[in-house]
Every structure is written in structure tokens, then in C-alpha cells.
Length: 88
Image (cartoon, rainbow, N blue to C red; front, side, top):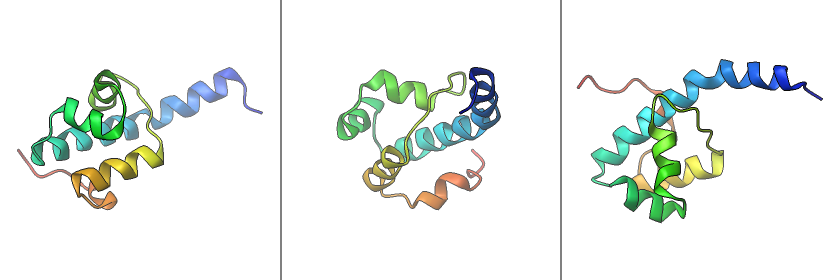
């Protein structure tokens, strides 16, 4: 069993991945013409939860099930969320 400090370090080490994933979710959500509220409604979550996931200053975790739901709703293959975004 991990100590509280070990769990924190694992979370901290993965933080950049969650931030990058959130930025990709926001990008593909906007590209699909969805508002945060519309996507949150389709996911059956509160808009503030989705906002925390998309925000680069927050460390909100997301399950694979919810991630795959986002992929289906936005019609974006999962692999696209792990590729560099096009220059804006």
C-alpha cells in the first residue's frame, strides 16, 4: 500500500499528462462546436467539473470511461488526444 506522500508524488508526476489531455479536450470540444455546458450535459457531469478538467491550472483527473465517452461524443479517435495540436 502506498503512503500518502507516495500517492502525491505519483499524482504530481502525472500532472502534465492530465493538463495536456484537458487542453486537447477543450480544443476538440470547441472544434466540434460544443460549449462546456453541452458536453457536460452529454457526459452527465457538472459543467464546473469539465471546466476543471480543461483548465491548465487545475489538476482534475478523468477516468478512461469518461475519456472514451468524450471521444465518442466529439467523434474524435482517442489517439488524437495524445498527438500534438495543430499550431493556432
